[in-house]
Image (cartoon, rainbow over all chains, first blue to last red; front, side, top):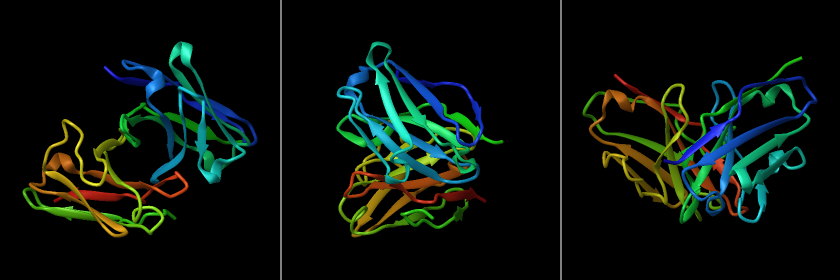
Length: 120
Length: 109
């Protein structure tokens, strides 16, 4: 069965960087785009960008350009999201989500989420 | 402030039909597909509707989506207590950036 398992919670200081991993299983990693979506406490969903695991190509939301880098390691079917120059308003639950086959912008499987707390 | 506009709350009684609206613009809903997600408390979102009105396998046909111009709607018929959740609409803009609505909290009275 398809699974996306994310790394554990992180606590970071303002100005630091965080790297969240998303280990996938149950499907061919390189066939489906992976997206990153975040949710601040008590707030709605915010799309951050996607990575094409086959080519490594990426597309970031304008808001995060220059601060986010999405990468992947095809040998272990894992994607990564690296967010730098953290601020307190980056405190959120970060999800990875798989783009559905034939409609990559439909997120059909989600990771369990990774809590990132930014605090001095 | 979200790019897509949803009412913050909606409610209904068991068995009733409830509709949640989502308003966008010509650069997102007006020219691209709409998606709907259900988020139960403490869980990751779940895909309910894709390509405006398609249901993934396993989603009951009580859930239906529609789109007209720059607006979309999610309808839930035969409302059940387990439908109490947050609902989000989503779309893509012409720059291939994803946009979400602010979410609608559905209460089953």
